[in-house]
Image (cartoon, rainbow, N blue to C red; front, top):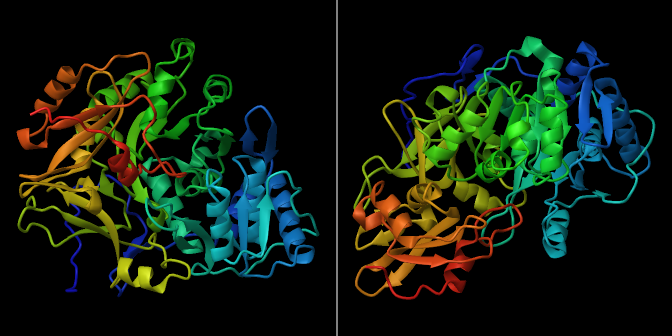
Length: 516
């Protein structure tokens, strides 16, 4: 393919201090920890007595205790479990302090962590363990390895640190090979996109409600907070609303990260009105379309917080772009600006049946992983000439704001007009009575495909189809407004990582007659 030129960055709201671009064209931070071990050691040496981790209702440990206990896990792995440097080590644990000890114990041993999605079936989990050739598995109910305190001292930025398995909607998951430099770059990105004052250290805290086996929870919450010396409070489940209210109301957690649906549930909970949220300073969301009305409600619910929408992939070690507070409501349908060391490009924009400037999103930067474990063909197809081909259809406006339009395979071709399902889902997200919605193609003899929407109503609400369509007509061109509408009581089908299974949805939905 021809050389790709990065898109114009437009406005840049983030701190670019210490960013240098190398001869390979890639921008990098010049002063990062060499490894995750160095990152943690620096925070321990800064203040070993500061609180590092809190498992709500169970346990609290300091930075010194985190290091000491993780070092004993490392010693147990190397001396008792037979793990060698570079071996893969699988983590099959739920959110908790043991998960973090397993993660850093493996790092201190020089091993490669393989986080396993706890929602996987036994067959899927076994595939990940076998495919990664893990020589040891941290298993639920088993004691952590214990041995003489050990810490590998010479890990390098390019050394492999973890393999996060993507959970695609078809086929077996692929292992994204994540280096220490990928981790530390993403951590720096996460700190800068929130405009964090690093000098506050122990005064900063985050609530991890998303799974630690995902890059959001691990790479963009746990590790950045440990880098600045802050406090990480962990919920065992994202739906633990009692834990949420305890963390915010009693513990004064000041940073929140979750999906829009969780904020909707929290704000609508009877206990929320009495909750003191004056100390919440950052509220970030992502992972699903969000209605402008919900952004407005979140801002009203957390009046002292900076809002922000993050976008990324497992292959970018989490964050790729971020929509900061100043843009949150006005550009609610955007996923923000490229982060300081991230280059974005649009591959083959335009063309027949395409909107001008719309094409596949490409990403380049030191946060992009080195490829897929043991999958050379998939690696060669996805990582080309230094650019990650994301499979997302996107556009970038003149200000540098990124808009995700669709997944390539989910685009609907209605009589030669492209309809991007995410655009329609964004419109449906704010429609009256809609809890969640998915948009797929419905085969049509004349048009080829038409737009179909599957809607799960809000709990206790009866859906008014006419009101939903009227809401869409006010926001979408006529050819994009759903011509088929199916209502279901069950939640939309998703895989263990929460990705919508549109193939399954297409097969099981009975559409009935078109609305027009």
